[in-house]
Image 1: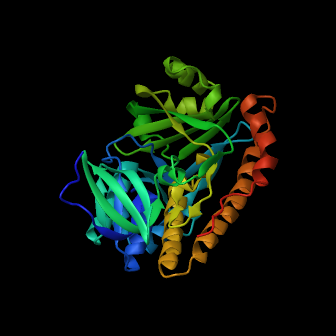
Image 2: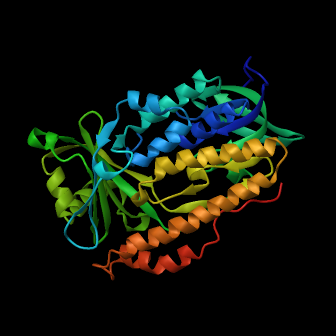
Image 3: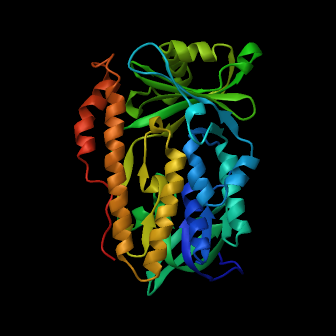
Length: 384
């Protein structure tokens, strides 16, 4: 494959991954006067499971200057959450009492496209359907080969940011490894409400069952998503996923009542949802951010919010490193390690509130893992 006429260009930072973390980092770096190239492997046309955003997401969106763009996209409002956890009766968390008001059921593809579009408007080079195929350390930075829509080109960068999600493709090429604390996956199914069900409660519902827990929420376009969270090794073979999903929803009376009048479309899809982090999270001339650096359990409802704040923090660290203060990478890693400790304590406490099935494999694992999880050292940096 021959290089294109776009040939070698120089950037301060190349960001691999144009999801929320990568886009937040790129926008922050551009505001600091840094030249940035964003590379996104997809065309934003792959299915992306929706997510419920808490009201506090307003803060990082305003910091990035995209709050009005977000509102203009008219994502589905979320008035709050309902949880059936610890006993059989639901309890509510209504956002009406939050200082920022309501939350949202996010259309992830639309949200990611919006962030990329704003980045392009602000002078950031954005390449869609483009991935890094080769990276070589050079004096003063990196030589990078990119394949964009089947055509190869090259660029140079002083710094690399890995925002490629859980695969952490760039960081793992440079010796980093993924540390997984569990094997959680989500078996998701899209549904279309019919009749009166189309106007039912739009709040997010979380419900614990003996083999795992359920998440269900409305999506744009009058659809719903229902995800059964369990461990990967507890799933049956792929050919049995549809029957397994149906059998597990029968264990969740509140979820089943919500979905009983819905039409099921297609077959279930499995996504990784484990708590994990990268070790190390930073090295000479590179950092990882978002899920590439630290991925959290969806029970926390912090995925996108954490990605945005992680991207902003990574960009601030990179800007300092480019200005000659290499200790910023170490401080970034230390901040992630502290965040992991706080998250792990909250994670153990929340799972620890569900004690109805202590002998069930899924819940027994959560109880046993709580002490080892909270004692984890977490992400760190290697010297520049």
